[in-house]
Image (cartoon, rainbow, N blue to C red; front, top):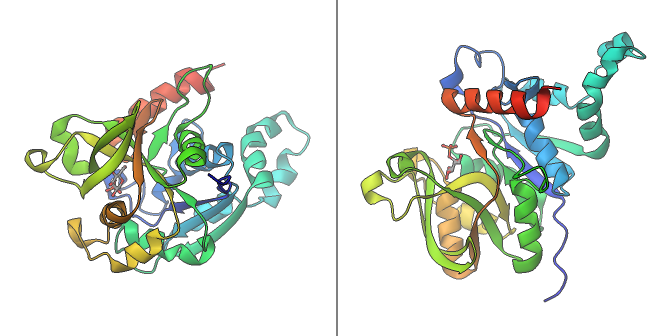
Length: 283
Ligand code: G1P
């Protein structure tokens, strides 16, 4: 097979309201909620950059300006702390800013994750790309293996050159919170997707293998998204578009290595905070 193109672009759907975190998210985007001292969205951008994706596209909505400000220079702050011991606190964000390019697009109506991804088509064009849901925070698998979920998908893409999604087994009673796949295991932890369904009740779920917020999508997904009718919650779902794609082309699902925190829930957010405090922040 010809060499696969290097995946350069990553989309960050970030238009949702974050109602589960009200009142914190009343005037602040949920993506800016910090896990210890770093906003969720920065963890996501760092993971994309580590996977080799340095063209970052945000799909935002009203009230999300703080995200654009976060990835821009703050002259007052730089001036204030220049040459002081506090400069070290800006090292990580400077690294991201120096190595990424950022594009912002607004999703004018909240018509679902699939619609958000379709909104990003003009900045993706005809190339494969990553999609990262910053609510799902993925830690490194082990100290010796630092490749996080998106990096694992990017490596697999080089081998299979098709759309690939990250999955994890969840308790069967939780299936209604996720897209659920069924498939045939073709290699250790790698499934050829045969079907997928968005947010099924436990009694309707074909398996307990849940989609996690890391995707690599080939550009024909946009054609399928345009054909996708509103599904669960009346929204255009990426799961439904991928299901159609899987009928025509290979779509893979991979059990990624490493721990995932559902930072869209208060419990997951607290677990992540404790984990990152213990494992990354504490000297
Ligand atoms: C979205 C997707 C779902 C996926 C989940 C992962 O749902 O639609 O398929 O399992 O992200 O976090 P959301 O959590 O945005 O409702």
